[in-house]
Amino acid sequence: MGTSSRLTARELIDLVLDAGSYESWDTPVDISGHPASYQEALRAAAEKAGTDESVLTGRGTVRGRPVAFVVNEFRFLAGSIGVAAAGRIAAAVRRASAEGLPVLASTSSGGTRMQEGTRAFVQMVEISRALMAHRAAGLPYLVHLRHPTTGGVYASWGSLGHITVAEPGALVGFLGPKVFEALNGEPFPAGVQVAENLAAKGVIDAVVPADELPALVDRALGVLVDPPAAADLDRRDPVPPGTAAERPVWDDIVATRAQGRAGVRDLLRYGATGTVRLRGTDEGERDDTVLIALTRLDGQPCVLVGQDRSRQTPATPMGPGALREARRAMALAEELGLPLVTVIDTPGAELSPKAEEGAIAGEIARCIATLVTMTVPTVSVILGEGCGGGALALLPADTVVAAERAWLSPLPPEGASVIVHGDTTRAAEMAANQKVGALELLAGGDVHAVVPEPYDDSAETLARAVVAEVAAHLVAARAG
Image (cartoon, rainbow, N blue to C red; front, side, top):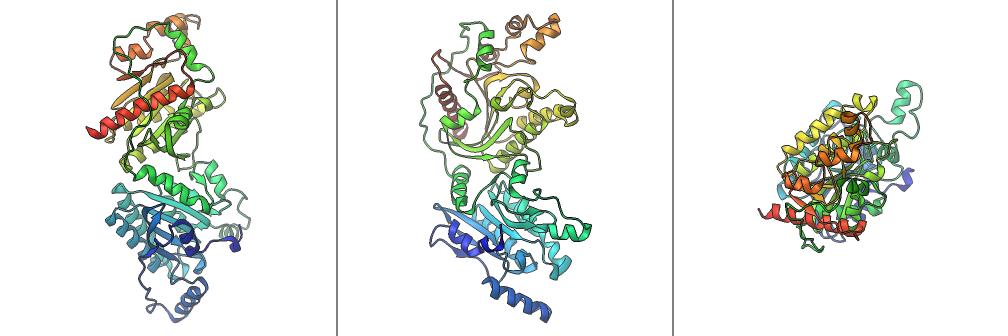
């Protein structure tokens, strides 16, 4: 992406904000205290960029929703952040917090301003302080990284978003490649500091062209700030406690392992609207066996984290990174004040030397510990397979819902059979003896509601019924 393709700050504002909604919060910058040569450089930068500093701030609306914005102007001294620009950013964030507005930031910067030295460098702390106070108030912070974003900007306000996306091909990195090559005598490896690679590694959530940014902001704020909507899906009457199973639980185990069984993706496909997928831990780890999203389940806004059975195979089991992604979802829900919905559907967590060294047991424990201390409403769904600690990691919730054919066990029944009988041949017997089925979990009080599964259920009809049940409990939690 060359310089000629870069949008200016004002072009980006015009593209993203609703027409006529722009309101500047900026006051004139006083440059009189700087040396004469630097004053001249600032005046030349202003003439080149058409702005008085490297940052513009203010408020506007995106698809009718009010937002505060902070937008870098790269043409002003490579978007570098000096003391005045930093003060402008921090002031805008604090004003947004006071007015209860989400903040949308779009970066394009070489980092802190070398002409102002350490004094400018340490202002990244003050920007971060303002942003963390904003987040502590439960207000959204969305980040859009433009080409290029490096240095202190990326290492502070560019990396503190609830959702972080970058434009295609953007150079995004801590150390600029030219500086690296000058210091080390060799070029930085190609393809590392590129938006697409960072998305693949779980550092950012997605690669989004600027013209698609309004739609993304619209979907995100639709979950984060809009009130709940009326239910649209038909809710099935839950199975009454004490209902006896009509078939051996082994039949259910076989059914939940079959292709075509409803999974977490079906819940989103058939029962959700306005979904924004988040990918990775945002700390450089990504495991697609767990899916996390901001979404509205039958009109109810929530953070969803679900085990994606379609991505769990012997070659790609659910590892500790997946549970760290789950904990990111838990933290987002708690910070943003949104209900959390967890979806259990797993043949079990990864069993390998790599998983042990990656703290798989510790991650299971930390997921459980986080869930039992959540203060927002929580609903967990046992959708299909529920094997071992990997399932237990997402189980604790205010309300536990299960599909009628779902099950929960300490180990796969085959493993339990090996431990007790020495081989796998008595797996069905072990499943029955361990009372792993949803109806038995309901009778024991470990599940609060069971969604009926008639024999003619499809993935779509079951998904819609499960979402309707979850949404009903979210409505009840909000009311009570």
